[in-house]
Length: 251
Image (cartoon, rainbow, N blue to C red; front, side):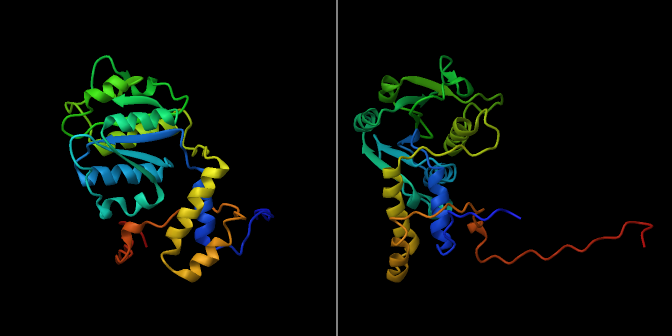
């Protein structure tokens, strides 16, 4: 039997306690930058990965084209919990990253690029990915503090954009740590801002629920880490139980 948690407010709505748990793992020391990604599936999948693994900030840069719309069937609403920064051109994006004290590491298929596992994990770092067809632009290479490559050994010379983002984020957060989720790094002020925005999303336009959740803004509840439901299965019919087949000679 687990000891009673005297800090837990058991009267708090489950959604509020779950949001508090998510806040504890949110990180801003790492952010992802996507330049001219033109496939809605890839952009949405990348956002879903970032949200699931605790990356709070994603920068979407439109240098040569419009930013691709999101595919809600792929993102399953992940963008609602992220801070999305949209930039028209590389210059403004670089300025914003430098102002936030980010080191810029650019994914670039070149022999001189550092293999991802050997790239320094320390400090605030922005990981930049180019589009599916042309890779990153020369402007990003000029601004880069380092370039990196995800090592492969197959005939395919490159990885899908969303897969490259997923592997990079996973390596940066979990590499050499095993499977333990790293702690978040948000300040209390940053948590307060996100808490307000998230509670509004969780209320879903219901005024009564919004008032109920607002009561917990000034007195955050203890986090309640729960395995979230698999939202992809909504509306599906459970598979019938499989009958055991007796083995020969059994009674």
